[in-house]
Image 1 (cartoon, one colour):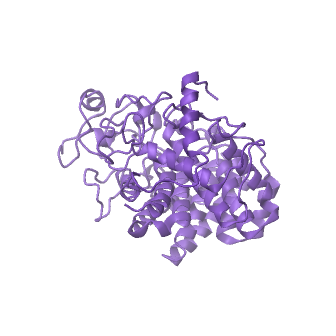
Image 2 (cartoon, rainbow, N blue to C red):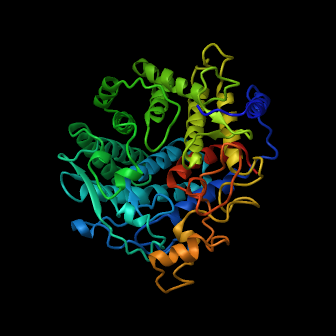
Length: 497
């Protein structure tokens, strides 16, 4: 846990003591969650790769990467660029699809007319993931684009001329982590489309089963076997056991097949942790499995419930949990060192609201963190709301960290397509180094407002420079928005404007 100044700790204690044991939240003065939800979903259109559909609402984007997969004589067009670059990294993309699907499963009923947009966001990813899984027998494609070459350029995706190399895992070059996450994404999406498109749901589930079997049979870390910088940008620090657990948990939900339950129990996984991310899925798997334990009374999964609560104890503010290992800014935002802090805020907040939902629907009224005062579902929701409200502008700077939401938001985000004129506005090709000279380092705001993009966020002292070059603070990524969609849907259903 990073250290904070005594004054910061006092401020955090004061902020949370005001809300932590409150049994209600005022319904006046809260953000417009429904508007933020609509914008958070629109963001995904700005991240699309491939041929854009006729109903594309983000008009400053055009078709891109139309020959992806040709290096391997397969079609790998489509999918998402993960952030401000032009590479397709399947590992975080699959996590994005899983979290979007989980958001719909839990909170689709609160999305009102936006559930169609949410399903469309999932399908843009899963159509590509199906291609990645089915294009070549015995292979799972895990990325397109030379990441090192791409990061040496500042180009619109419509102009990119860096190598579009293709990367895959196989029996001789295993990748149980990316395979397990892909299986989770396909299985979760099969639940989303079960009623909306039964044939598509069956395709997704069949592919999920096959990819999960591959993950078990050929175990290893994908970042040990793929080149082109793919494994350097998204290495599997946590190994692959968490993805095996995660994939099995989702397949258990989608199939109700007890063989996946047996696999889960055999995996165990007793790691103590305070993070949930594209890399480490243990906390998410534990919360997901706790649903069956709390709501269906499956005692075999009770250990996962205890582990889920241990994770929550680690992310609560230290004024409320003796076992907290999570730092907070003076303004009350969870903060982890490194890049794109908002990804951790969004993922943790999703787990807080979802576990609170399970608690409220079960007989589990409270739990304790090392003999602290009992923690209730209301406490968890209050903390999640505090995080979401901070993102939307209730913070010391009065700045929304979602582009296009509120009166004040980041103007110079680290995003190639947003920072450069659209093809419609500037049809001529803009080269790799010209992009650096004329656009990356330009002082003015981005010409294209990337509505709904949530940037990396402020530093540990609530400061935000709004500097395009500062990718750690100013880059948006799909795996921040995906879990935030669920949080926004939940609060939109609770607090009507």
